[in-house]
Each structure stands twice: as structure tokens, then as C-alpha cells.
Image (cartoon, rainbow, N blue to C red; front, side, top):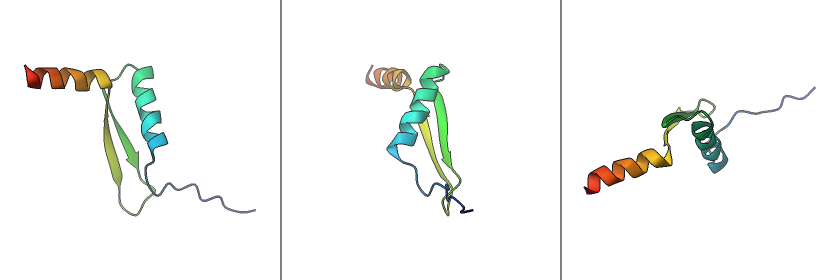
Length: 61
């Protein structure tokens, strides 16, 4: 039996897309994408597009 190395060494665009899909599916505004598989912890904050648009509008006004 061989061991499949499924540890993720870095975050890819597909992981970002999956996280954004979860935000939409669960109607959430923000989320975290965390990778524990690399030598150091990797984390990214995710924001729903509508939240970013509201922030930009309030900064411009």
C-alpha cells in the first residue's frame, strides 16, 4: 500500500474560487482560507464582491 501525499504546500486559485463559492452558497460576507499543510501557516481573508463594492462606495463618497 502506498501513502498518497495529499498535504497542500501552497494555496492555489482553485482554492480561492472554492472559498468564494462557499461565501455565496452560505450567504456569508467574509471568510478565511487556511492552509496548515505547508511549513508555515498560510491564511487569506475572503470577501464577497458586494461587500468590497460597498466599502469602495463609502470611501469615494
